Length: 299
Image (cartoon, rainbow, N blue to C red):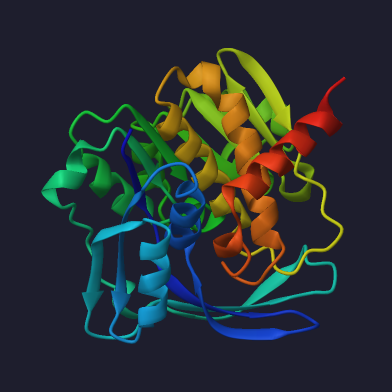
């Protein structure tokens, strides 16, 4: 079934103790859409500036990402610069330039409004809800969020969460949103905001799914070497929703395998800077790594 992905399409400048990589293709929408493209042809919604490299548009098209909802506006593309410490778990933002994102209001092409699966990748909750307002009977809506919106747009976030089927956030954000230091006991409180499904991402320690069917704990794929974790969470949720859209059946029947696929695709993301490794990955590699993950987690 059709998948709509709304998120940022950005240029990232990433520094680690070993290497600096300026103006890489990045953004929540970019990572999520490419990850989803291993399963479906996602429709990406976003905005870029006139400085956005043509080679990145070509890369999207190579991965069968529909770009009819990506607008090119006069000005500079959203740019983020960040620096990682040696252990890759801690990073700091060096600069953020909003560029053409400032004042942008997403408008869906008519053909995109009938999308059945919708991924609202990290973005201001007001903009995410504006997408929902334009949809025509979607089957399943997933929203990713972050601590910033809890600090500056909590009312908008509360309104959004009443209208989505699944909330995805990391463990520190789950604690912040609920005031509960224990992630497991925070889960019922997260459901009270509205979502029937909640996924708490725990980075290298995997993810926890909560639903009426109970809990499911999925591991991250173990890696010997991490080059750059930027976008891994977006890749995780993109691949997960992409698999759900591909199968098109019962969410409860498919969600656990979808999460494992998300873990696998996220692992490839971490093995290169930006989208460099993800875009070179094949479905054969993904399926092989999925089998390995299933093998090492089976009792």
